[in-house]
Length: 91
Image (tube, rainbow, N blue to C red):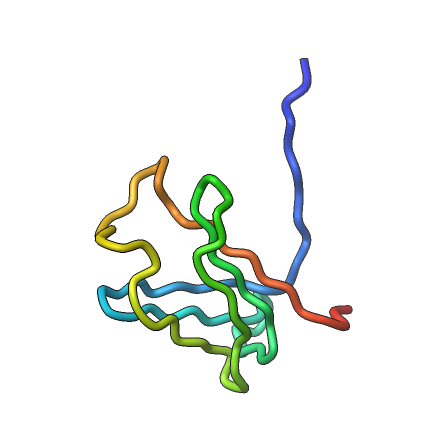
């Protein structure tokens, strides 16, 4: 029997603070917890629909203005968010 799985090796960690009027996303390194600038970040719902995308600033943060999903105030296992990040010239 085989179980489908995937592994991703990275030194980046995406953090997220969800707010009513705005939200905050920031990216740090896993080994030193230092902010990482110019990282492309995307937020998607569980069906893969793109809700927001942007890049981190020099402090490794980016504000998300407005609601990600109109009227949505809580998450469940079936209605969560998925975050991806990508940095160019990553070694």
